[in-house]
Amino acid sequence: MKALVLHHLNEFPSLDENYANPVPEKDELLVKLTYAALNRRDYWITQGQYPNIKLPVIMGSDGCGYIGDRRVLLYPAIGWGSNKRHQADSFQPLGMPKNGTLAEYIAVQPSYVYDAPDYLTDAEAACIGMAGLTAFRALFSRAELRGEDRVLINGVGGGVALMACQLALAAGCEVHVTSGSDEKIDLALKLGAIAGYNYKKENWHKSVIKEGIHFDVIVDSAGGPGFSNLIKIAAPGGRIVTYGGTHGALQNLNTQIIFWRQLSILGSTMGSPTEFKELLHFISKYQIRPIIDRLYHWDTTDQAFEALRDSHQFGKIVFSLQ
Ligand SMILES: NC(=O)c1ccc[n+]([C@@H]2O[C@H](COP(=O)([O-])OP(=O)(O)OC[C@H]3O[C@@H](n4cnc5c(N)ncnc54)[C@H](OP(=O)(O)O)[C@@H]3O)[C@@H](O)[C@H]2O)c1
Image (tube, rainbow, N blue to C red; front, side, top):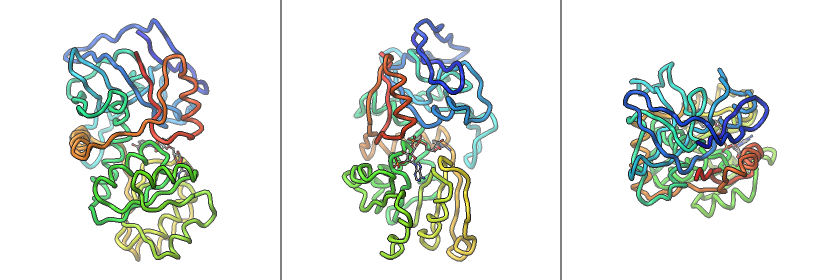
């Protein structure tokens, strides 16, 4: 089969046209994949910025495909375990160390296979996995989002962030966004966000404070020095969910604001199969369509990884595997 295999760090994965087809173990099912989507994790792995890297590996956590006539999408990990508060030690996203979805076939346990929502194309369904699950748990399980909440999505150009924006809008929330790109802010406003701020402008948060705006829920994957500004614009009782550290370690956190405003800073990572099922129910109920930035093919895989590296996309980077 064709597969996109990472052999060495600091290079992009390469196409292997003769990779051995997976042989399903015990009750595993063989899925013929049609589309897969990238996440920043895939880029971190190529750069060696991920724990316990084992190579070679077929990359990719997200995929849509077929088992016979059944159109399915995959839970993007294995081994969550039985505790809904946190994952088990054995938890691992697909695509390192276990082979992932950037291939023509994958073997998975039946419990990780879900019917793809009818109204989505294969390519759209392939986008849901990691981004949707992470956004869903962060918003609903961790921040306990309600329709009356005012929400800030930091860095809306991110795959998870954009999905969080779509989910929060569907839940009826007033959604504000930040981005390092004015164009991406405009696109988020077209989706229904009410206001946007460019985080590259120094002291952007001060204009928010000046307007008297505070946020009940803030969703962040950047961390870094900018996180301290998010604390300043959180409403009393606010919940700030962090699921990433793209911009580095947290700095200069003002503990007085955190305790006086009764803020909660909540860590969140992906989600359980139960939450994945709830996510699929939610997106089907509101007919949410994941946004695709661009479709790539076997002969344009380097361009896809370059796009991921440079973060110019608005929406998911998707591969056709046909
Ligand atoms: N814990 C988990 O389960 C989990 C799951 C998925 C992802 N993650 C982590 O979350 C992060 C995002 O992942 P992703 O797949 O959504 O990535 P992505 O699609 O590549 O998005 C990256 C986005 O981060 C935003 N960003 C960069 N620097 C920023 C800053 N200083 N302030 C605010 N936003 C900034 C940018 O938004 P703009 O383009 O709008 O400027 C950029 O587009 C990564 O660090 C990833 O490892 C964690």
